[in-house]
Amino acid sequence: MKILRHAMLRAAARLVPSQERAEWLEEWSAELWYAQQSGVVDADRFCLGAFQDALWLRRHASQRAPRTASWLASPSRCLLFLAGLDAAALLAILPVPRPSAPIPLRAIFLLMGMACLILLATTRLSLGDYPASRSAPSLATRMRRWIFLAAKMALILAGMYAGLLLAASLGEKTRTAAVLVDALLCGSVLAFRWALHDQRRRCPVCLRLLTNPVTVGQRASWFLEWNCIELVCLRGHGMLYIPENPTSWFGAQRWQYLDSSWSGL
Amino acid sequence: MIRMAGETKLSHTAAMILQALGAGHVYGLSVMEMTGLPSGTVYPAMRRLERDGLIRSQWESQSIADAGKRPARKYYRLTRAGKATLEASQKRYPLLAKLAPVAETGQ
Image 1: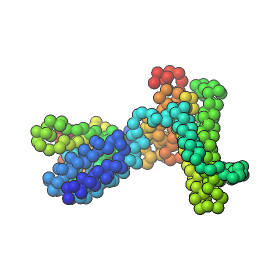
Image 2: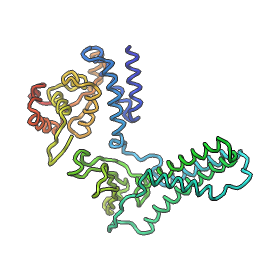
Image 3: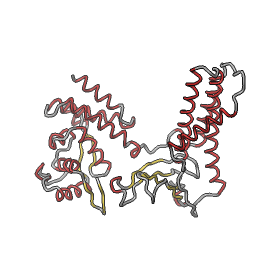
Image 4: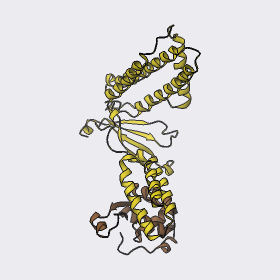
């Protein structure tokens, strides 16, 4: 029975964010030891509660995320990653025989159009408010942000094209090709969603991912006070406020440029 | 939990947990025993209270645990903000004080 209880704790621990897992498991294992010794609580029910605790930690992990940037924080690494995926896709289709006829342009546009329609229906396309201020960067710097987004989209489209080539080589009427096109459509929508989400979480100046998420205010009192998640650019370019409950006065995420005195960050 | 104009209002469950901690029941298990709440309620509530700065956690010394031939435990204590919130909650929930008398020395 003891083995089963520890197995339950270990299973629940898989839900806990990895950086907190060891300490979490140590705490629950210790408390389980005392629960079994004292016998005042049902040890099985005690272990079941670990799942609720683990789920709570998982759900609130973004508010207590480690203050380190991810591997994809750098814009060049992000583009390299996408280019690497495209290269892998192209390598994968190299041994496949070429389709007898070139892929009609309308098939590519149809797939792109359907992906865009699904995207419009399922996600916000707004990238947020970036109000002009004295600390705002030059036009050239601001244009880099759009070039970066366009580069990501182009790399995603290149991946889509590789997938279409593979589908076309399988023949028009095969079941595998049909499934592949469906999967490609779903994959494209997810990839475009990711590209937009990634763009929203980047500093408009240095294009690095923002870090140090902090919850400001309480969700329960959103009507009375500011309630959002605040992220900061580690290079001191500015701060991003993401509303937890979008309202008419604070519907989209808002960027605030910081002046050069913050560059010491 | 709702925070308005410097005053923090707790749910009844969170107030019970603060009361138990204030009374010297510093471990999750002893809070469960004191309040009668299940582990799936007590631990997430304590995470929330810790996130909001009302309690803080600390591991007991490993040498003390080793001497007692038992695993080291994580204990929780009220912070200054937690004590102030508990006092406000006791006014809001008068029956709370009957749950467990808060230790005079505090935690």
